[in-house]
Amino acid sequence: MPFSRATSASLVAFSLFLAAPLARPAAGAEVIDRILVRVNSRIITQSLLDARVDQAIHDAGAPPDEKHLHDLKKGLVEELVNEALLEERAKDLDLFTNDAEIDDQIKRLKEQNNVTSDEEFERGLAASGLNLERLRDQLRKTLTVQRVVGREVNSKVDLSDDALRIVYEREKESWRVPEQAHVAEILVPPGEDGPSRAGAARKAKDAMLRLKEGAKFEDVSKDFSEGTTRVRGGDLGTVGKGDLAPEIDKVVFSLPAGSHSDPILTKSGWHIVKVIEHFPVSYRPFSDVKAEILKKEQDTQFQRKLAEYLEKLKRDAVIRVAPEAEAFYTPPAVVAPAKAPSTEPPAPKPAKKG
Image 1: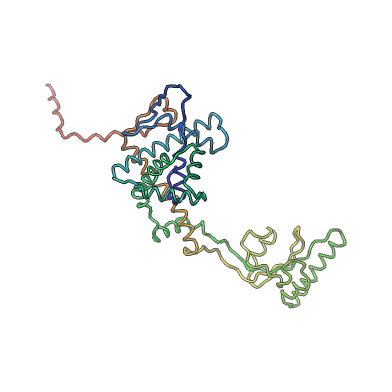
Image 2: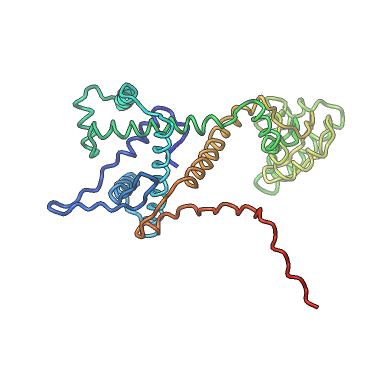
């Protein structure tokens, strides 16, 4: 979809896309431009489609295979139909873009590209197969279409706190914070050979004995642990369920707060863990995630409302597709109006003989 809740910069980028160079016939060839689709009083021609295809291939940097080329043309014809519908709607609503607004967009385009003179700007346009007159025409169309979208679509997007809170409650599991625990550890590496492995096991048992004798966990960690948390008395901080190695995780989330485990052997060595505090499952508050919800809703609501609006315009339009374009576009089916019930009284049944 070529339309969005765009900034001025992306508006200009979209305008340049619209201004793709038209396919030019060979010298001396007869110029015949076929009409592919009629959208009410507007037409979509072969040359216009060819220009879009050429620009898309140029932007991609490589020609697509046959299937992708077919899909590309389908998408581009859809875009052209949408643009025609919106341009016609702008005319119905008497929406237009004046020269001062176009001048402002061109000024911004120059600033974004660090262009310091009109001559440099026109050389850049020429290198892209454009000229100033054509760029102004496309900017006029694009800005006018944006006015239609702003009036007819943006106004229906509800981003109020109440609407965002409804989304928050509907998608609350997205903001779920799993069960957590504040944990401290004593870590004794496993050793590389038989004697050192045995020595590691004895060291872990000695640490355990000190704890049973009533020594403080943080003191024992400083004396026995070889992990990076040793300087903090073994404090690992808060961990979520599933963050630790499975063997340790299972123990941590089964221990009551204030207690410690027996030595647990993992690949990284012997662990003695203490649970300082448990935190049950919770949810990030609305105030913390409001900005995330707003950003997502700006995009999803807008795209949904725009799609609904375009579908309505298509249903109300007269769209005729030439045979050579039928592979790329199928207009929406025309729904026949429901037949009104008859107001005539039923015919009397003939009397039975006899």
